[in-house]
Image (cartoon, rainbow, N blue to C red; front, side, top):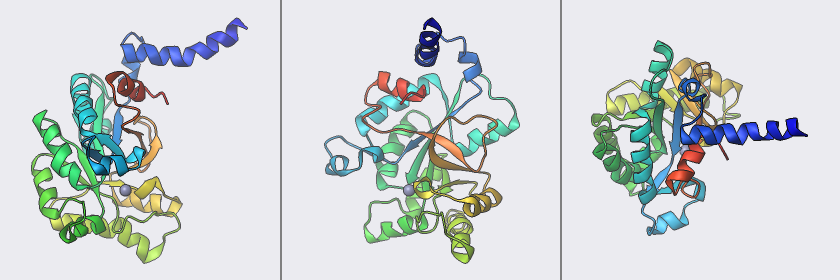
Length: 260
Ligand SMILES: [Zn+2]
C-alpha cells in the first residue's frame, strides 16, 4: 500500500519540485531543451482570437508574460541553433528554448515579432509557399518582404511545405515538391539556406520522414515532448503553448514542466 502511494507520488511530486526549482534532478534536466510551438498571437479582444481554435492561439497579453518568463529562465535560440548546439556537445548551463511559429500568420510578424525583438530574442517561423503567396491576395499571412524583415532581425525561416497538405500517403513528384521544392522556393525568395522543417498538422509517414531526413538538418512534429540529445532530428517533438493552459505564470511553468 505504502509502496503504491510512493509510486504515485513520485511523478507529480518530482515535477512539482522541478517547477519550484527544488529538484535535485534539475541539473540532469538541463540536458533537455524545449521547442515551444505557437501558431497565432492575438489581442484577447480581437474577433479572430475568439474565433480561433483554442489550440491555435495565445493572447498577446499572455505572450508577453511567456517571453519574460523564457528570458528569465532559458537561453532562447532559434530551432536551428538549438539543433546545432546539441550536435556540438552536451547541453549544459541554462536550458535552451526555441520559440517556433507554424504557418507564418501575419500576427507572427506584426504582433509577436516586435515583442520578441523588444526583449532581444529571436524565433523560428515555418512557412508554407501557398500561405506566403496568399499574402498578396490580402490573406492573413506574412509576405516575402515581411519574412525578409524577420530574417534580418535574426529569425530562422523554415519550411512548412509547398501547399500545407498532410504528408502521409503523399508520394513521388508531389512529395518531392512539398518537401524539397518548398525548401528551394524559400531559399530563392530569401536568399539563404533553409535547414529546418515542420510537418503540416504534424502528419508524416515513413516515406515523408525519410525524405525530410535527407533534405533538412532537423524537423519538428506536433507530438508532445522535450528535445533530448538522442532524439531523432527528423521527428523532434514540441510543447504546444495554448492560451488556456498558459494564461498565468504558474500554468505556463506547469506546462513546461511536462504536466498535462
Ligand atoms: Zn500548419
